Length: 86
Image (cartoon, rainbow, N blue to C red; front, side, top):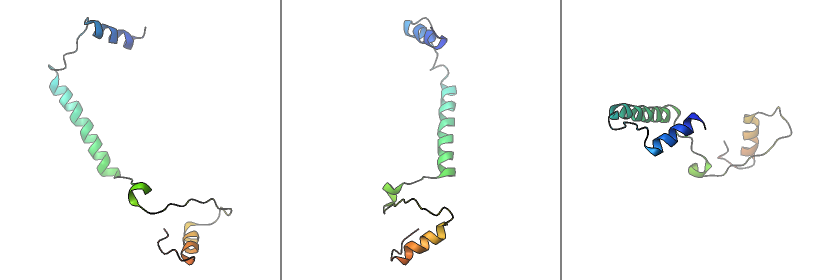
């Protein structure tokens, strides 16, 4: 049996106990660190809304000419009458 499984069995039987309440300040700090990392990640990276939340239409097409760039393709779409191409 692995050491982790053995520890789980000993905890289940009551042979070993973990003093969570006595170390509550440690667990508060661990929880606070996790929350701070989560908020910092949210502020630094922001939210990446998909098409489901932005609205609109997404169209993906494969092109035969790999040397075509985005500006040329966008101009070609705008020439067809679609003004909101990006």
